Length: 423
Ligand code: BGC
View 1 (cartoon, protein in one colour):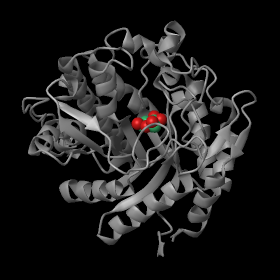
View 2: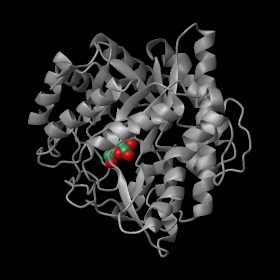
View 3: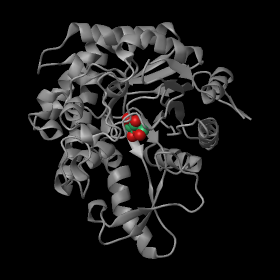
View 4: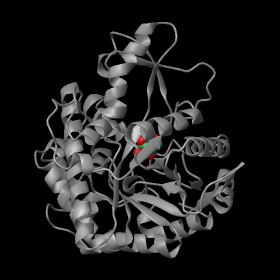
């Protein structure tokens, strides 16, 4: 039995596009114009209407004893036209933050979670030459308007996933399939993060506030499958590019090879106060010369693993490995900004949470500075390409009536949040 400290953040995480409804951004445009891209033919037009129901939703999560909430501010809502900031949108997020505080929950605020305003997408999206400057301007506007209530800022969510899916696999807008563009997008997102981090720190200093700035990295280590030493070799380069390139480049203050050419980036080395860790699972790969899009590493299933409805293995021990290796390499505090399971019948979730929190406890016993665990996600929501067909939530949402119903696993997590005891 282990007890997590009182100031350890235990809560859940979400993203604007997946819950709010009523948005117009590059994803919504894709969902309207090419509905066939969404597996169940749905869209985020209404999502779970969290934009209007945020007070009740946050009250429900607080009643489950959560003391932290991660959510994202939708750039397209706050800045519907370039340079024009909507005071009503900022006031909305100010009230979301105030509601979190009133309910005893620490807000963890993400500035970009996969979506972009259409006006930016139309001028090149992540690859627009001025994307870092524009993102920093948006970040500064958020910091000025909202910074009094926010200590934890996440600049970008999973740049590694977004660049891969949008520019390598072509699943996410703008649907490119080019390794060269994926690498260019990675460099662009590094610069966007650094520019936003500088803006957040500068505004905080001007106002005498404390800002802890990080990015949320998706950690999915690649391991070579047994059977051939080539498998481990094949894992190395894609593993580095996906899991370590961004963090190591930031730590060293330069764009490392092979994504960059060693060029230095001012402000990079000071841009991270913590690492936001999104952990779901690890992957096992074999060498396959035909898998050119993934640099000749092809994913194969783990023998005997439990798989989620989304097809990911359940591997709590991988979370412990992720925490210890990030701590050993970077020595920065870690906030688990996402960890969750697609489990449509709520069969795996309670055990999943207990096992992953045990991994956190073990990592802390080894000396890793883990500051919190934010379960993905509070409410079943719009899960990107699968639509509503994959359910990660602690709370079910009826798609007809939008009625919220806590699942049995939410009570198990609530008890841990209340007692802080992981047994
Ligand atoms: C993303 C979330 C997503 C979750 C589950 C993460 O990669 O940040 O937006 O819903 O995975 O697939």
